[in-house]
Length: 190
Picture 1: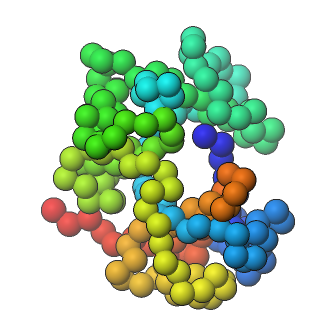
Picture 2: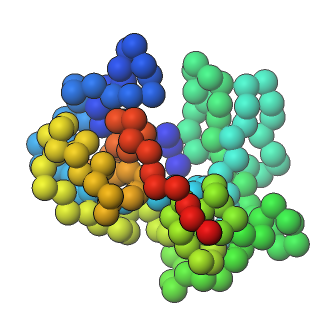
């Protein structure tokens, strides 16, 4: 699972925010060649040849675990290098991934987001650990204009991490998060 770019360019004065300029190469979204899907806030996982993997980021100067599958080339700036590492029964750090696997209806190869009570503070408010197939929760957006997307993401009823745009034919993706506009999600209440 490769890192994906943000739909809009980062603000050079505040790299946590975006400006009203499409990132070069992402014009396809505004040209009507995108399917908008919900971005879930969890931890990346994959099912490859029917087996469960979790994402593992090899830091600069470190070695990848034995049998790790690289997701992409190392980042030339940070040196981070994401891999897939197989989850194993009996390993405590894999227990929530394995619980999530047990709670999906159909096991099929693809990338997923692990969500649930013990993942990232559970901003998605799941009552059990689940694997959500990336691209499975389609969104209807009123407009793809910068201000309209900002307004849509700021609505109380749209308490999601963000949007992932999938090209309709060739697999390209890009994202847009609430945090790109400085919008915070609702606080979790117990």
